[in-house]
Image (cartoon, rainbow, N blue to C red; front, side, top):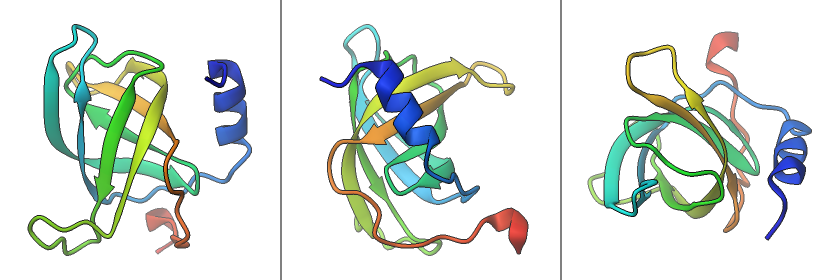
Length: 118
């Protein structure tokens, strides 16, 4: 397992792009309870993603992460991978967590343009 500090510094060496893609995150929360949640990315880079969740997740835990395009097809994902949680902090919105994951499965091969540049 890669130490968290190395994971975060490697992720931060890549350019993050503010892109909101629908995603379905599943895994186990910090109490071991299974969950699945529809959310969207806050930002992306080739090797990771950040998103908001209402579940309390632990650093080092693994997630299943299918991401869909702007017009998702029911039950289909344009990109699917797994990720390891590398940071968690309270979000500004009430009760949610801001979670960063490093992809441990396939990485993005697609290039995104920041929504703020549009």
